[in-house]
Length: 613
Image 1 (cartoon, rainbow, N blue to C red):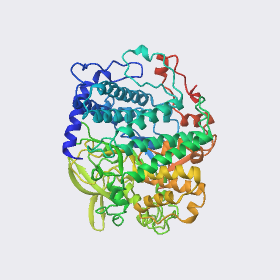
Image 2 (cartoon, helix red, strand yellow):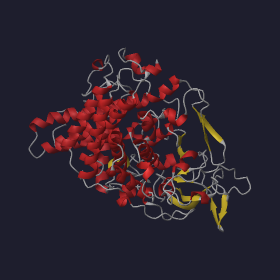
Image 3 (cartoon, rainbow, N blue to C red):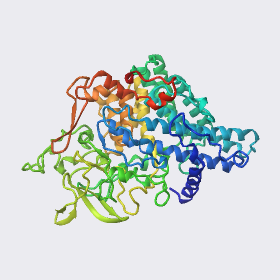
Image 4 (cartoon, rainbow, N blue to C red):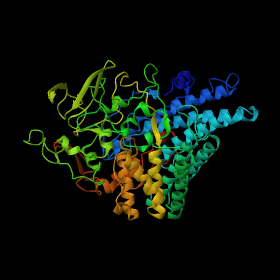
């Protein structure tokens, strides 16, 4: 992040915190008008409009920059809580109160619903007021003002897209609310209508935004195209796989196929028209030997501030670091006590390890065998989950993303390094000797699987657990590659260009290209795409949304009324069992979220989603 950009951005943020304070919604219907700074003294210049837009970015960022919590609703991440500060929107409390477990989570996102509508309100505020400036704008200012409207409309589209992916039909509001009576009886807008409005916003944004934003953290044409493609991809999935829990929606296979084609067209433009490339050319880089971390693969650095501003980050939210009250808290969430007193709210589940393929064969390795450390020979047994050698010759993204026994990272306290700390499951903060060198083991008792995250963990000292400067991505080029492959495969089966893109992503893990049997049919190639989405987007909040749009929860967790599925640890101990004896209705409640009862109490026209009646 360039320092000049930080100063400009956060000056706007801090001032606009007060500017928007009285409009901070507690719910959809209880809001005050954002008219404190009247048009007589504001909304006069391009600088005024830019200032307001920065406030919208700042207020909408906390609705997306902790999406890794959502991975707890899938199979491969455990989210045991959230680090966000209660009652403070700037610190991301939209995520607080949510349930990030694989089952039973759909009724716990009332706060997210409310905060998302707060984001709508902030975007509308900018759009409405800057539009009023357009008729009298100078010839030189007009393109910049239209750009600002485009950015605000893109932000609004992102918020509404999140709303419909969780709740289906939602009230659509496209203007500033000055009186509660305006929405006191507003019904839910049909999904298709909201989707069309989202696409209109993204089309306008695409037309008005620059091909590349000169300022760090601001949106560009590729971002608008990528999100437009993603909206159409989801629309295609809902039409192909159905959404029976939303009883107002009727799937249309023809509409789904057209949406797949439109999505692929947008993704193709992102890939081919703007000179975008994967981080460090998609090259795997160096991978240190087992138990060392001096040289980590390029994929690891993609999730550190080194990658800020990189072309792969099509859309990313900036953070300010120490002293700004705008830092990211990634280390606090993914690391343990040995790293500035972090809390390990998010950690890998045991089952993710077997998803990382062999760099030699390009396919899955023999499954790991859980073994208790007290079992004689467990540390050296072939394929033992606690034998470090079992992790040799794996996808470089494994070393970049997770740590297993005897993997190391840099410990930190009071912003200073404490040297290497080895992770040894169930050995917390203990003196250990490795190859004649004495260490203190990684203190991370928040882990219950035998693994902790390396992804997002800063491997250098100097920043506190809540003072990160990483630009958190909400749209990456690698995701676009995979979505393009998915969209084209759904209509035409495996295509050469899509296969090449998937292989390009595999190359960053130092994996060979896909074998012929992996691209022999739609079904085989879809499985290969899903595999890459699991490991490439691990911990980025995509998996649970994928499972819902593909209607794959039963595939992953077995059908209703079954014995459920245990999650275990590297010792073989049973940690948690999910979906045990759960009914069809409880599965349905994972596919669509509950409309907040408080909102329905205030608005008699807000219907409830069927599984929650």
